Length: 141
Image (cartoon, rainbow, N blue to C red):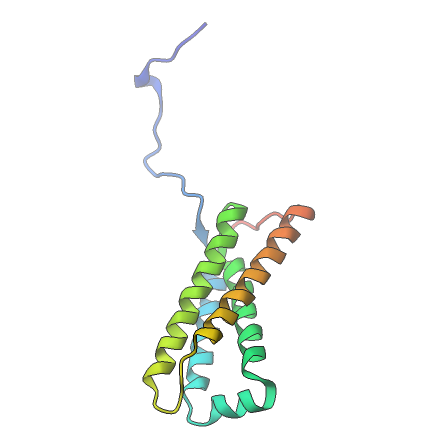
């Protein structure tokens, strides 16, 4: 039986992190979020869209799409991947609602934020199930 002396153990100078970001998808997420915030800051534009399509439907679709972009931008173990996706979208939703509270012609809503988080949770769960049942491997960054 051979036991290596601790001086023989090679330590990596760079720690191995289970989390990596894909910059292209991250930029797409940031771009979509900025576009959404800019459109929402035009007086009357957000209200017109909400009246036409429904505020909660718009939140669900927008934040569900952002959850897909966020999920694609992350490379992490499955559970962490899903939790980070929901967490990032929750923070973006909170930022969006905070910005809305600063505009006199907009109003922030906890219910909107709940729909944002709910959409992200559903998308993250569906993508986690897809990865589990269909053994989808994440592409290398």
